[in-house]
Image (spheres, one colour):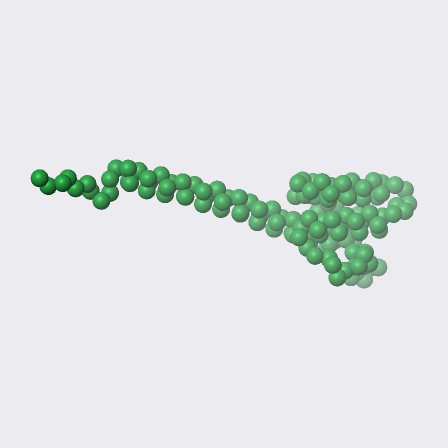
Length: 135
């Protein structure tokens, strides 16, 4: 009698191959979605930080105000940025704005930190100095 020979790909092997292929595809897709979400959030933060720093010469101007209004959406996951923004808003509402420079510096530094921008080589004066012929 000849021993029965099973086919090299039994039903169980086929099922394992299909399930593992599906699982690896789902894991890859989930990882890709997560990674691109994080990348897009980082790009949004960098763009907003760039606009805030680029328009700091006129903190009461339209461009800076527009960027400030976006802070609550883009930095919603950063309690420190929102807290510094609240402090800046309160200082700007105070007549005479006695500590506006300090509050602006703190806010911009926190935005840079939350955006992943290093400001190690910059002292506080760089956050106030602007290139503007009107100054």
